[in-house]
Image (cartoon, rainbow, N blue to C red; front, side):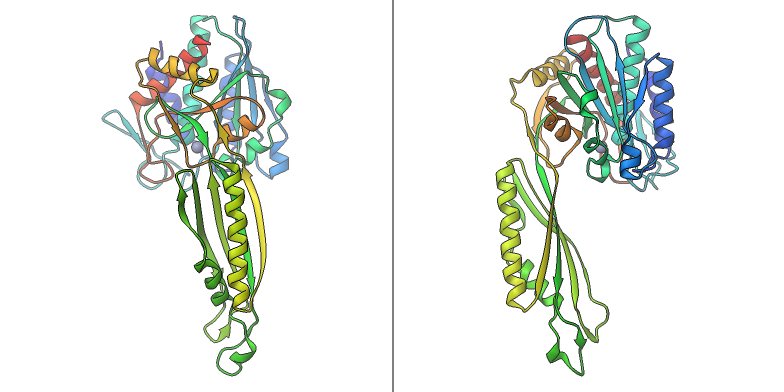
Length: 369
Ligand SMILES: [Zn+2]
């Protein structure tokens, strides 16, 4: 039922629209026009103003003909850098980004799949439950658009985010929460040659703080990282200030909170042992979610995948997606893979057959509820 040619054309159009986070106006307008052609009313929320971006989150509702609770599909409009002036290349059934940029199948494969599924429903006049669509902005910057969703506009009983990598059939049912940590270490500046006795070396203090931390994989569901360190001015100055940025993640919110607290304590002890002082900031970027294999939303995806000839694979993710936010809003939501591969690199690609299968899966989920 899926019109492969039309699907691929839509996907190629989408990836050629520049859409870095906070600069999603053009792609939002494109999606809005497509939905208007399908006679859908589109509502754009106030997120643009709140996050200082060009576009807000888009909401649309396909009224459907059958009964049953509405079903939600959520995809994101923004892409990562380098992602401007993408020149997609199609070779032997695979679409690449042209080498200089990402392809942007993350998440335009999801957008194209949702659009094509709706076009099929419309032209075949299929009987379906109501379908709610949400297109978020600034997802790649920490789910910022989703965090500004107007929860009252979402009534769906089940949700599916199309934003996991790999061939279709993977169903993410668990994902971690994440804390972002920013520690500012203060020492005392002094001339390194004339009067080093008066100085407190903030770099050395930060090093002592970091040296005592447990980092990397803590257990099978918990990780920690220090990823950025910046500070110092010149070799002849005892450095006064260093900033250290890191993160903790866990599928278990309690473990994440405990690990963040441990990092704070050990880091502070290490810095203070070197005479330094710490300002420690923690921000929880998003909550975790956990669905059970027998949950209806998971079973809907499993059955639909099997019906279109895909092997359903339940899995967990090491990263957050809009599904974390939707679950927290009370809509049980799984994150489905939609074909994109090697995402966030200039080698990103998608196998066209995987894009087609992803679309068939969306269609089957809608038909099968
Ligand atoms: Zn994505």
